[in-house]
Image 1 (cartoon, rainbow, N blue to C red):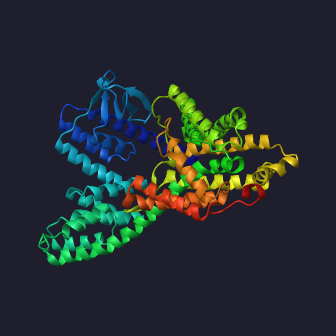
Image 2 (tube, rainbow, N blue to C red):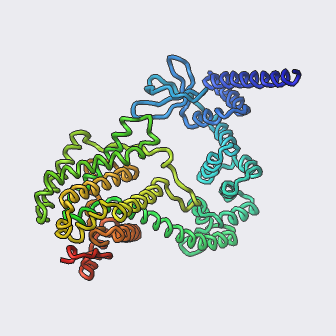
Image 3 (cartoon, rainbow, N blue to C red):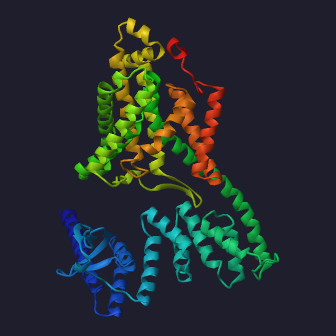
Length: 537
């Protein structure tokens, strides 16, 4: 009984303490809109002393000029600028309060003294935050904007930091401050730390120390320090070259993955049916617009919208593809020039139809789990959206290979590809195989549109950017061959990425096109040629 009473009394004390702390937070927040700057400074100091996770967002918003008072209610809110005004949220419970116009809000003003105080307090709170992402970003910000007044905060955070990656960033942040010190010992220690860093800001600081005049003499009075910085720069440039190569490979592979998604459907239709489908880019565009439509129809499912859009885009683009094949393409088999002209006309009709619905480019929101990047170090990072696209394109390729190799429909498609006449004589309805194949290729193009909506603008002409590249991939890899399409897409993506810095985007594409023309002269069937009586005729 006594134990139960004691536990109850402890719980009551905790609840009372929590309520008191909540009331104190609310009272101090109100004082941030005080009549004098001294009153505001006192309120800021009081908030800093509270152990409350709401303090940091409030002080940071005040520092950035995003703390407002709602005129009619006198309520303190955090505002984020949007097209219609400001999206505001309560500082007490972070609940959204809708959109307010500028006339409805009054910004809480601060002077230079209070701004310096806020910068120091915010930096200290961020460096001691429980969230490692906040501490990491704070250290990066300090490297970009070193401030002597924050040296003590950095040293204090460095002593208590357990995360080695963040600790390394803090060492660089401290060195970024000390490099401008008048203390020779601190400057030498700072150069030694910066010599092992690859952040652009660290490299710029070393370059400043190692700078020379036109006659080749160091501008730095301490020539030994300048010589050390110059030697460090040589080592860092070698590292940066390696990281740049890795980054180019990653972006080349991600570009190749985009080309793979855009071309893989075309490889099927072109390989099985021999149809030059100039409306393939519009199937990509329809998939991207399907993603936009789903986000508009189900805003509450934003985080899952991309997952929902994948089958939806496949069905929409696939259905349009089957409709085109049944109404137009089936009457033009054996006449490739006429199919080219007909599908080009279809592409114009689809573009105009979308323009009637949405004239301008639309914004497709990237879900939170696809946003951001994987930061390896200060010179190398991989964006999550491109990483997901690489994995997604490989998954689509694997599923398509399974469909073609392990299913009855795939068997029929391969039979029609290799020998259409024999397939017809065996009872395969090649007309329906053509329709389903065209629908499958168009559906995969729609899936490509879902992926492309995360890295490029969604508009009526977006598909036209990829149609020529898709044909190059298909021809280079071997018509109708998935493995050839895979290798062709990745190799062209990587080559394009390495050519762009030297030749430019346009000239780089021209060089690639000339190479493919020469390659086809030597190997007309591409990297991996299909085998069969039909394809050899």
